Image 1 (spheres, chains in turn blue, purple):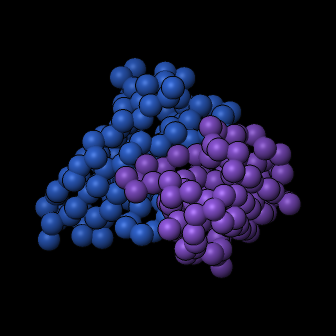
Image 2: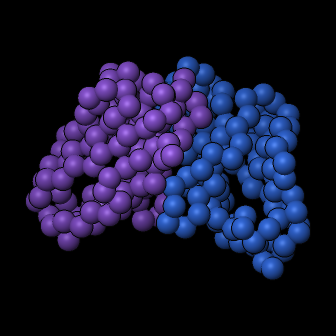
Length: 111
Length: 111
């Protein structure tokens, strides 16, 4: 049974600081890693994906992947109150249509 | 233009009834999914169709029956509704099975 683990939070971060969200996964065969943001009452929205070890940057967001440690993280620089949401980590295998989601981390940015 | 749409947005019904949820995507994607998100916000895949063919069928009661009339539509029919079926049901679509895009969700309440 594949598992994706996230700290449920809530994680509180002051406005303008860096928010760091972490995710670990159990299946070493996992190849693709995704971060979704979900506002309360809304649907998950894809914000980042990463396939290779290392860092991938997109605006204020950086995804970091370490396959040896089975660890993927999301950094949000210059955090804004609009970043307050639940962040879901998801993984799948190469060629596998199925995504396995973590339970999500609730992030609150404090003005 | 809505990329992935679902109807209805809200569904309140009594135990024992049969109901359907409809999903349509205009992204030209080949793969569509149904997810269930429970009260603890855990998002779990139920079914997936690729070009009208069922490719993922998780451990879901057979009261739930998906139907895909064409690759742009995926419907979910639920027979003999139970209290435990109350949840938010999300439809999603993807091209190649990786970056999935979610619909707005259908909040089902069974009384």
